[in-house]
Structures are given as structure tokens and as C-alpha cells.
Image (cartoon, rainbow, N blue to C red):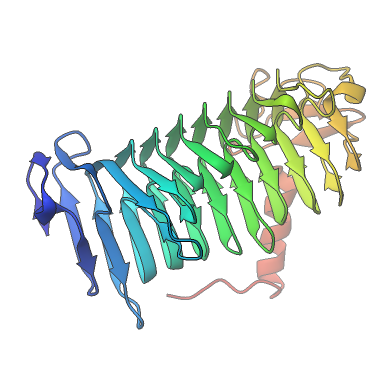
Length: 350
């Protein structure tokens, strides 16, 4: 279904229930606009048997949903998915707000099913948890931008609860929550972040990321994130086992004085081979808790060209670490290839 350019308002352009496979394509993010005019949801995808839905090249804005019913969850002002395989591409979500109790995902709530979000922009969305997105199943976010989203509780931009969330090459700026200013990874959840930027996000715990589940962060940059009001973990706060390698931490702060970059209150973190802003970092200020930070990079992998140019190296304390353009070490890629050849990993056949 093609939606021509225009500004679409009124009840006929809201409360759209989808229970069959469909492709919905607008003219562009700037030319096809669905304006909810401070009314409730736009798209609700529901299927017991699974449908395939694509929504792309449009803007959804000004959803306002209020819930005052305890125990009855409300989520996904723009898109609520229950049971579908959904792709959202090249779309914009602005000023979608959920208020009240039990509200999740100002723009998107993936309650059940698989969602892929690519090349999309989320600005000024809000909810109790997951200001822009709340995920309870399987979601991949790639090449997307999250700016000034807000959650009262956790996940200013994204909250992941008992789901698997993969974030690639995305940017998080100025998002805010009580915990996990940009992303909150809750209990029984898996979070994988690669090649992403976290700039100026704020929370009490974990200005950039708050973690209670399984977490791996690689090849990403954390700049100017803050744990405010006496909080801890300017960039990352974690209560579980996690791996944080080959990242850059610059100018993050914890007003509580513990863990300007990383605060681990329980569990442990493998934080080897990161750039901490200098060749001789003050780890007393930068990290707190059970954090293994040795060896560390002694030169900025971006300024040295280690991330931008294949085959270059970033020096670690006592180690020289080859890097790929993604920021992933060469030996990880070689190991994966050997495992495929040896039969430990079997590529999925189409």
C-alpha cells in the first residue's frame, strides 16, 4: 500500500489494526506525515499465526495515550506489535507520548514477535519505560538516531525486558531516564551493541546504559554522558556479567563520585582493550566494582585511524591489537571463520 505525500489527520488515519501481511510505504519521511493530534495509537499489529508487515518512509507524530488502569499495560503509541514479523525503515517518530501507569514504548512496543528498525529517527518520545522503544521479544536496530527521548523509569530511548536486543551503528543523544539514559537492559534480557555512539545522555544510574542482563558492547563511543543527582556509572552501570571491549570513553561523569565511566554494583565486567581518554587513565575515578580493564588502549583508535582503516592497529598497554573498520579485533573475525570451517558454527541456509 502506497501513501501519497500529505499530512494525514483524523480518526480514519488512527486506530489502524493490521492482521494480514502488508507493505505500507510513504512518499518519504518528510512528505508523508501521520499526525495523531494528541489522540491514541496509530498502528496495532496482531496475529496469532504471524504476519509480515513493513512500514517505511513516513513520519508518525503527536500520539498521546493516557492509562490509569493498574495491571493493564499500554504501549507503542505509533506501532504496537503482537505476533508479527515487522520491519520499520526510513521513518521518523516525533513527540509520541504515553502517560499514566503501566505504559511502555512511546513510539514502538514489540510485545511479541520480531522487529527490525533501520535508518529511522526517534525524537522527543516518552513513556514510563522505553521512551521511544520497549522490547519484550526480538529486535534489531540499525543505523537509527535517538534524540531527547525520555522515560520516567528505565531506558530513555530503549528498554529491553526479557528480550534480545541488537543495536548496530546507531546514535543516542540527550536521552534521559532514572536508569539507563539511552538503553536499559533488564533482567533475563540480552543486549548486543556494536559501533554506536552515546552522547550526553543522563540518568541516576547508567547515563548511557543500565544493565541487569547479558550485555556485550563493542566498537562504540561514550562521550559526555552523566549519572546525575549523586548517581553512579556515567556511561554504564551494570548488575550482571558483561563484556565491554574496544570502546571509547571520553568525558563521562558520575556526580556521586563513583564510576565516571563504569560502575559495577554486582557481577563482573570484562572491560579490556578500551580507550579511556588518555594513555595513563585514572581508573580510581573511571571505574568502580569488579571491572577487569587491563590491558587498555594507549592511543585513541579513531584518531590513530585504527577503526577507520583496515589493517591498522591500536596500541594496548603491553599489546598491539589489530582492528577492523567496525572496531572489532581481527582475531574475533578469524576465530568465527575457523569455527564455521570446523563445523562449530553452521551458516543458516536460505
